[in-house]
Length: 423
Image 1 (spheres, rainbow, N blue to C red):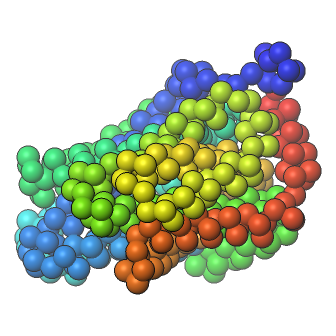
Image 2: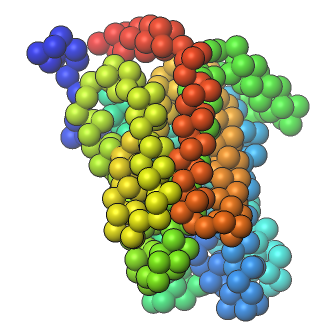
């Protein structure tokens, strides 16, 4: 094992994990699945606006796309434990491709909009076990947890980049080939994703016994996962920190456009403000990857503590470019989520990784939706600058609540054991 001058393990570069054939296929499949999801959302939102003329119905498309991630991840996450993860992802891709083709047929036949939204809901629901299995599969692909941490970081950064690019590509496709043509291309992305997984990822047995679960089995699995999270102090603390700090990166994005408008700026400036937090997060992740895994874990709490501080300065209602710098600084510190999520997966028992990631992801999605709504309401009642400042202040309060009981020793011992086991 290579070590640094200080005696710690050398950081694992992105190039090391990208040379792994299985991971390259998983990454490509994830990119294609993300693009497919974004294209479907934009296409149906555009269709709703075109047919009904209602902005509310158009916005409902995005709301519906969030609902399955809230309860679908929690309820369907156990599939990623009870079934072989590679096969489960392939089946999910095949089902989503078929559902998108049904969506295409519904659009071409001008079937009721309620049916179209129902199909979109099913597409998003089938995606829930795919993403639970995707994260858990990485721990199968990489025996060394240090390599997993780097691969997980790269997967998260690419996913964040895809969120921006996927929406832009969706809008461009609709302009070029229309809603129906975009849906056909969407089906192709899911099909290619499945082929990549079939061709390049090795089949492995399921992590837990039981086979295909029934509804009663799923409910018992969810309860088992919730019970484990309640009793496992390191995992519970990591999850609560992730949920509690969500408001810090939600607040700037929720009212960025309104902040620009209040300052008399164009939507272009609003777009720059929207891009500032994720741009900062990318900078933060690239910095994190220069540290060894143990250092990343040790710095989770300090980075989280720093993430809300720049937002407190928005209380002075600065000009947009100063606000953008503050958003970037805050976003760079929110990169603590990458080692946090990686550590959560490393420490989770293999037979429970799917359901634990599903439960944590469901709570995260719920808090995100509530955070967007609450920030918007506060901005309407007061001002965008106050809403952003309040988000930063709430993040600081969360840290003040968690800090006294933060299980530093338990997390350090657990992660050191896991990392050294892979050396």
